[in-house]
Length: 285
Image (cartoon, rainbow, N blue to C red; front, side, top):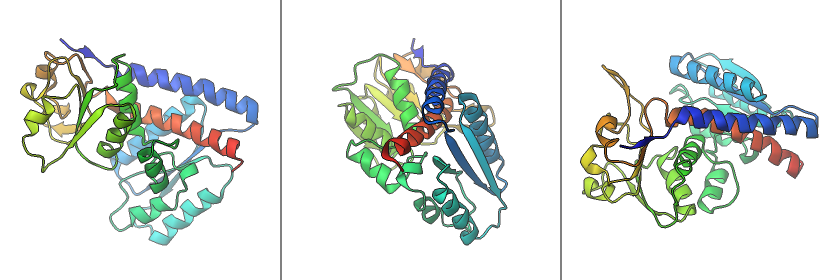
């Protein structure tokens, strides 16, 4: 029977750590850590995410600025707002809530955010730093996944890690982070052949494929660490990519859905906002 990796408890620990660091930052530099969040449109899920981010910022002592634009805002209007936040020296981090309305060029808007204010860790510079194993801002969900994996206390050096999913937001960054920890990494995706044979070799299995209960017990190695990134809405409620009830009988550690990876994303966002502020002070930006 697997030990459940409690994302809620670990995320609270991360936020408590950030809270202490933010307090020390304020005492030392005599200013707030400031995070600006841009929301375009009325997407209900995005509104909830933004509200949760604001709540977390308040908890850790980060000053949050919220900017909401109407659904049919022009590309120029959104770009003008982002550019103004880039120029504002009091703003340490900028987050543009995704997805943006389809009428907007998301890549162009995100490219306006410089690496030093990129709390999401999506910029080309931060992605390059991650690939080169250099310091930078790591994407929030992958950083949270790594914190969950490390919480098990299992030695990572030499372990075979298999990631199912190759997205820029989760799959690729997690693969790079596990490589940095000296794991042997295999990335699988929708075109991978003999998927079951590959996942069954994984000491660490990370699923971010977005298919309900896709990872079954026969796809998992005995005593593996299983991290379920999927959040799938079904008639029976939320479930992950992993058949939790079956796989938990075989794995050594497993994350639940909900209550696993999800809470870590916002916790790591708070951590990133703090580090963006600290780096700006240290570099005199």
